Image 1 (cartoon, helix red, strand yellow):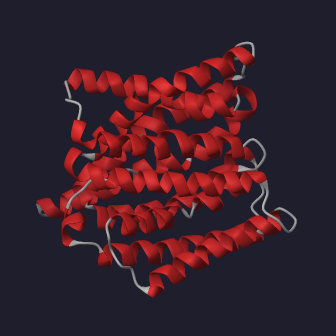
Image 2 (cartoon, helix red, strand yellow):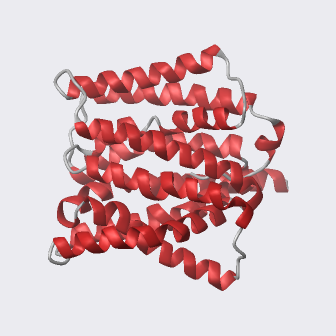
Image 3 (cartoon, helix red, strand yellow):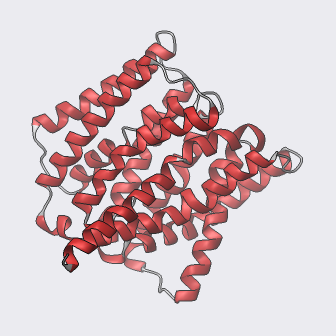
Length: 306
Protein backbone atom coordinates (compact mmCIF):
# COMPACT_ATOMS: atom_id res chain seq x y z
CA UNK A 1 0.00 0.00 0.00
CA UNK A 2 1.50 3.35 -1.04
CA UNK A 3 1.55 6.55 1.01
CA UNK A 4 -1.44 8.08 -0.80
CA UNK A 5 -3.61 5.05 -0.02
CA UNK A 6 -2.51 5.04 3.62
CA UNK A 7 -3.31 8.74 3.97
CA UNK A 8 -6.68 8.17 2.32
CA UNK A 9 -7.62 5.39 4.72
CA UNK A 10 -6.34 7.34 7.73
CA UNK A 11 -8.30 10.36 6.54
CA UNK A 12 -11.53 8.37 6.29
CA UNK A 13 -11.01 6.90 9.76
CA UNK A 14 -10.30 10.30 11.34
CA UNK A 15 -13.21 11.84 9.47
CA UNK A 16 -15.53 9.12 10.74
CA UNK A 17 -14.35 9.73 14.31
CA UNK A 18 -15.15 13.42 13.86
CA UNK A 19 -18.66 12.72 12.55
CA UNK A 20 -19.20 10.19 15.34
CA UNK A 21 -18.30 12.89 17.86
CA UNK A 22 -20.72 15.38 16.30
CA UNK A 23 -23.54 12.84 16.01
CA UNK A 24 -23.95 12.80 19.79
CA UNK A 25 -24.33 16.59 20.05
CA UNK A 26 -28.14 16.77 19.84
CA UNK A 27 -28.79 13.86 22.28
CA UNK A 28 -26.26 15.33 24.76
CA UNK A 29 -27.89 18.75 24.42
CA UNK A 30 -31.32 17.22 24.92
CA UNK A 31 -30.15 15.66 28.19
CA UNK A 32 -28.46 18.80 29.52
CA UNK A 33 -30.99 21.51 28.61
CA UNK A 34 -33.84 20.60 31.01
CA UNK A 35 -31.49 20.81 34.00
CA UNK A 36 -29.06 23.60 33.03
CA UNK A 37 -31.13 25.71 30.65
CA UNK A 38 -30.72 26.54 26.97
CA UNK A 39 -28.48 29.58 27.49
CA UNK A 40 -25.96 27.77 29.69
CA UNK A 41 -25.88 24.73 27.41
CA UNK A 42 -26.06 26.65 24.13
CA UNK A 43 -23.57 29.41 24.96
CA UNK A 44 -21.79 28.12 28.05
CA UNK A 45 -20.32 25.27 26.05
CA UNK A 46 -18.52 27.83 23.90
CA UNK A 47 -17.08 29.60 26.94
CA UNK A 48 -15.54 26.33 28.16
CA UNK A 49 -14.31 25.45 24.67
CA UNK A 50 -12.87 28.96 24.24
CA UNK A 51 -10.74 28.49 27.35
CA UNK A 52 -9.31 25.29 25.86
CA UNK A 53 -8.82 26.96 22.47
CA UNK A 54 -7.09 29.97 24.02
CA UNK A 55 -4.73 27.72 25.93
CA UNK A 56 -3.84 25.80 22.77
CA UNK A 57 -3.25 28.98 20.75
CA UNK A 58 -1.08 30.39 23.53
CA UNK A 59 1.00 27.23 23.86
CA UNK A 60 1.60 27.20 20.12
CA UNK A 61 2.16 30.96 20.06
CA UNK A 62 -0.18 31.32 17.11
CA UNK A 63 -0.27 34.88 15.71
CA UNK A 64 -3.69 36.48 15.32
CA UNK A 65 -4.71 36.47 11.62
CA UNK A 66 -5.78 40.11 11.32
CA UNK A 67 -6.55 39.91 7.62
CA UNK A 68 -9.15 37.19 8.28
CA UNK A 69 -10.73 38.70 11.40
CA UNK A 70 -14.09 39.48 9.79
CA UNK A 71 -14.44 36.00 8.31
CA UNK A 72 -13.50 34.38 11.62
CA UNK A 73 -16.04 36.47 13.52
CA UNK A 74 -18.68 35.56 10.94
CA UNK A 75 -17.81 31.91 11.40
CA UNK A 76 -18.12 32.30 15.15
CA UNK A 77 -21.53 33.96 14.89
CA UNK A 78 -22.86 30.98 12.98
CA UNK A 79 -20.95 28.04 14.44
CA UNK A 80 -20.26 29.16 18.01
CA UNK A 81 -23.36 31.23 18.80
CA UNK A 82 -26.34 30.77 16.45
CA UNK A 83 -26.35 27.02 15.87
CA UNK A 84 -25.65 25.89 19.47
CA UNK A 85 -28.04 28.40 21.07
CA UNK A 86 -30.95 27.97 18.65
CA UNK A 87 -30.69 24.18 18.65
CA UNK A 88 -30.55 24.16 22.47
CA UNK A 89 -33.67 26.35 22.65
CA UNK A 90 -35.47 24.01 20.24
CA UNK A 91 -34.44 20.86 22.10
CA UNK A 92 -36.18 22.03 25.24
CA UNK A 93 -39.41 20.69 23.74
CA UNK A 94 -38.63 18.41 20.78
CA UNK A 95 -36.85 15.03 20.77
CA UNK A 96 -33.29 14.70 19.49
CA UNK A 97 -34.56 12.43 16.69
CA UNK A 98 -36.88 15.19 15.48
CA UNK A 99 -34.07 17.71 15.59
CA UNK A 100 -31.76 15.33 13.74
CA UNK A 101 -34.06 15.28 10.70
CA UNK A 102 -34.03 19.07 10.33
CA UNK A 103 -30.34 19.42 11.15
CA UNK A 104 -29.69 16.68 8.59
CA UNK A 105 -30.16 19.36 5.94
CA UNK A 106 -26.99 21.09 7.16
CA UNK A 107 -24.60 19.55 4.57
CA UNK A 108 -26.89 20.63 1.71
CA UNK A 109 -27.35 24.10 3.21
CA UNK A 110 -23.59 24.44 3.58
CA UNK A 111 -23.17 23.45 -0.08
CA UNK A 112 -25.68 26.15 -1.06
CA UNK A 113 -23.85 28.87 0.89
CA UNK A 114 -20.49 27.64 -0.42
CA UNK A 115 -21.64 27.92 -4.03
CA UNK A 116 -23.04 31.40 -3.46
CA UNK A 117 -19.96 32.63 -1.58
CA UNK A 118 -17.68 31.05 -4.17
CA UNK A 119 -19.39 32.78 -7.06
CA UNK A 120 -20.31 29.44 -8.63
CA UNK A 121 -23.34 28.87 -10.83
CA UNK A 122 -24.86 25.52 -9.86
CA UNK A 123 -27.15 23.69 -12.22
CA UNK A 124 -30.91 23.65 -12.00
CA UNK A 125 -30.67 20.06 -10.81
CA UNK A 126 -28.63 21.21 -7.81
CA UNK A 127 -31.40 23.58 -6.78
CA UNK A 128 -34.03 20.93 -7.48
CA UNK A 129 -32.54 18.32 -5.15
CA UNK A 130 -31.86 20.81 -2.36
CA UNK A 131 -35.39 22.14 -2.75
CA UNK A 132 -36.81 18.64 -2.49
CA UNK A 133 -34.86 18.03 0.71
CA UNK A 134 -36.06 21.29 2.20
CA UNK A 135 -39.65 20.62 1.14
CA UNK A 136 -39.51 17.19 2.80
CA UNK A 137 -38.33 18.75 6.06
CA UNK A 138 -41.02 21.46 5.98
CA UNK A 139 -43.69 18.82 5.33
CA UNK A 140 -42.33 16.64 8.13
CA UNK A 141 -42.32 19.54 10.59
CA UNK A 142 -45.83 20.53 9.55
CA UNK A 143 -47.18 17.02 10.04
CA UNK A 144 -45.46 16.72 13.42
CA UNK A 145 -46.88 20.13 14.39
CA UNK A 146 -50.50 19.24 13.54
CA UNK A 147 -50.54 21.14 10.27
CA UNK A 148 -48.24 24.08 11.00
CA UNK A 149 -44.64 24.82 11.85
CA UNK A 150 -43.99 25.11 15.57
CA UNK A 151 -41.54 27.48 17.26
CA UNK A 152 -38.88 24.75 17.82
CA UNK A 153 -38.95 23.91 14.12
CA UNK A 154 -38.45 27.56 13.17
CA UNK A 155 -35.54 27.76 15.61
CA UNK A 156 -33.96 24.68 14.05
CA UNK A 157 -34.40 26.07 10.53
CA UNK A 158 -32.61 29.26 11.55
CA UNK A 159 -29.95 27.20 13.32
CA UNK A 160 -29.27 25.29 10.11
CA UNK A 161 -29.29 28.39 7.90
CA UNK A 162 -26.98 30.44 10.11
CA UNK A 163 -24.79 27.50 11.08
CA UNK A 164 -24.34 26.54 7.42
CA UNK A 165 -23.31 30.08 6.55
CA UNK A 166 -20.73 30.03 9.33
CA UNK A 167 -19.41 26.67 8.16
CA UNK A 168 -19.14 27.84 4.55
CA UNK A 169 -17.40 31.07 5.54
CA UNK A 170 -15.00 29.18 7.76
CA UNK A 171 -14.29 26.71 4.97
CA UNK A 172 -13.31 29.57 2.70
CA UNK A 173 -10.77 31.10 5.09
CA UNK A 174 -9.48 27.79 6.42
CA UNK A 175 -7.79 27.13 3.06
CA UNK A 176 -5.16 29.57 4.23
CA UNK A 177 -5.26 29.17 8.01
CA UNK A 178 -6.17 25.53 8.50
CA UNK A 179 -9.52 24.49 9.95
CA UNK A 180 -8.50 24.02 13.59
CA UNK A 181 -7.09 27.56 13.77
CA UNK A 182 -10.34 28.97 12.40
CA UNK A 183 -12.51 27.31 15.05
CA UNK A 184 -10.05 28.14 17.84
CA UNK A 185 -9.93 31.83 16.92
CA UNK A 186 -13.69 31.88 16.38
CA UNK A 187 -14.17 30.56 19.91
CA UNK A 188 -11.71 33.02 21.44
CA UNK A 189 -13.14 36.06 19.64
CA UNK A 190 -16.77 35.31 20.48
CA UNK A 191 -16.26 34.18 24.09
CA UNK A 192 -16.17 37.70 25.64
CA UNK A 193 -19.71 38.50 24.47
CA UNK A 194 -20.99 35.17 25.80
CA UNK A 195 -19.76 35.50 29.36
CA UNK A 196 -22.38 38.10 30.33
CA UNK A 197 -25.53 36.25 29.17
CA UNK A 198 -24.25 32.96 30.54
CA UNK A 199 -23.35 34.56 33.88
CA UNK A 200 -26.72 36.34 34.07
CA UNK A 201 -28.59 33.10 33.39
CA UNK A 202 -26.65 31.31 36.10
CA UNK A 203 -27.51 34.05 38.61
CA UNK A 204 -31.15 34.04 37.46
CA UNK A 205 -31.35 30.31 38.14
CA UNK A 206 -29.82 30.76 41.57
CA UNK A 207 -26.76 28.76 40.59
CA UNK A 208 -26.32 25.59 38.61
CA UNK A 209 -28.08 22.53 39.95
CA UNK A 210 -28.18 19.43 37.79
CA UNK A 211 -27.87 15.68 37.97
CA UNK A 212 -24.92 13.67 36.72
CA UNK A 213 -26.53 12.97 33.34
CA UNK A 214 -27.03 16.67 32.62
CA UNK A 215 -23.45 17.53 33.61
CA UNK A 216 -22.18 14.68 31.44
CA UNK A 217 -24.17 16.02 28.50
CA UNK A 218 -22.83 19.54 29.05
CA UNK A 219 -19.25 18.30 29.41
CA UNK A 220 -19.63 16.42 26.15
CA UNK A 221 -20.91 19.33 24.06
CA UNK A 222 -18.34 21.70 25.58
CA UNK A 223 -15.22 19.56 25.19
CA UNK A 224 -16.04 17.19 22.34
CA UNK A 225 -18.74 18.76 20.14
CA UNK A 226 -17.31 22.25 20.39
CA UNK A 227 -13.60 21.46 20.50
CA UNK A 228 -12.02 18.00 20.26
CA UNK A 229 -14.30 16.68 17.52
CA UNK A 230 -13.04 19.39 15.18
CA UNK A 231 -9.47 18.15 15.41
CA UNK A 232 -10.30 14.64 14.23
CA UNK A 233 -12.49 16.09 11.50
CA UNK A 234 -9.88 18.53 10.20
CA UNK A 235 -7.12 15.93 10.37
CA UNK A 236 -9.30 13.63 8.30
CA UNK A 237 -9.95 16.34 5.71
CA UNK A 238 -6.24 17.11 5.53
CA UNK A 239 -5.22 13.49 4.94
CA UNK A 240 -8.11 12.18 2.87
CA UNK A 241 -9.24 15.34 1.07
CA UNK A 242 -12.42 17.38 1.30
CA UNK A 243 -14.20 15.73 -1.62
CA UNK A 244 -13.84 12.22 -0.21
CA UNK A 245 -13.92 12.66 3.56
CA UNK A 246 -16.54 15.42 3.44
CA UNK A 247 -19.12 12.87 2.25
CA UNK A 248 -19.03 11.32 5.74
CA UNK A 249 -21.18 14.21 6.98
CA UNK A 250 -24.11 12.44 5.39
CA UNK A 251 -24.11 9.64 7.97
CA UNK A 252 -24.51 12.07 10.87
CA UNK A 253 -28.32 12.15 10.62
CA UNK A 254 -28.83 8.36 10.94
CA UNK A 255 -26.21 8.19 13.69
CA UNK A 256 -27.93 10.94 15.68
CA UNK A 257 -31.29 9.24 15.22
CA UNK A 258 -29.75 5.98 16.43
CA UNK A 259 -28.38 7.63 19.59
CA UNK A 260 -31.77 9.24 20.25
CA UNK A 261 -33.47 5.85 20.14
CA UNK A 262 -30.82 3.86 22.01
CA UNK A 263 -29.74 6.38 24.66
CA UNK A 264 -32.88 8.47 25.15
CA UNK A 265 -35.51 5.85 24.29
CA UNK A 266 -37.07 8.18 21.73
CA UNK A 267 -39.59 6.94 19.18
CA UNK A 268 -38.55 6.57 15.55
CA UNK A 269 -41.72 6.95 13.48
CA UNK A 270 -42.22 5.96 9.86
CA UNK A 271 -42.45 9.64 8.87
CA UNK A 272 -39.10 10.29 10.53
CA UNK A 273 -37.43 7.43 8.67
CA UNK A 274 -38.86 8.40 5.28
CA UNK A 275 -38.04 12.09 5.70
CA UNK A 276 -34.55 11.25 6.92
CA UNK A 277 -33.89 9.12 3.87
CA UNK A 278 -35.07 11.91 1.55
CA UNK A 279 -32.93 14.49 3.35
CA UNK A 280 -29.81 12.30 3.25
CA UNK A 281 -30.36 11.47 -0.42
CA UNK A 282 -30.89 15.10 -1.44
CA UNK A 283 -27.89 16.24 0.59
CA UNK A 284 -25.74 13.51 -0.95
CA UNK A 285 -26.61 14.61 -4.47
CA UNK A 286 -26.22 18.32 -3.65
CA UNK A 287 -22.83 17.84 -2.02
CA UNK A 288 -21.57 15.66 -4.89
CA UNK A 289 -22.74 18.19 -7.46
CA UNK A 290 -21.09 20.99 -5.53
CA UNK A 291 -17.80 19.07 -5.30
CA UNK A 292 -17.94 18.24 -9.03
CA UNK A 293 -18.52 21.88 -9.97
CA UNK A 294 -16.16 23.47 -7.44
CA UNK A 295 -12.93 25.10 -8.65
CA UNK A 296 -9.97 22.73 -8.78
CA UNK A 297 -8.10 24.74 -6.14
CA UNK A 298 -10.81 24.28 -3.51
CA UNK A 299 -10.96 20.53 -4.15
CA UNK A 300 -7.25 20.10 -3.80
CA UNK A 301 -6.90 21.91 -0.52
CA UNK A 302 -7.96 20.55 2.84
CA UNK A 303 -9.73 22.52 5.49
CA UNK A 304 -13.20 23.82 6.10
CA UNK A 305 -15.31 24.33 9.13
CA UNK A 306 -17.38 21.33 10.00
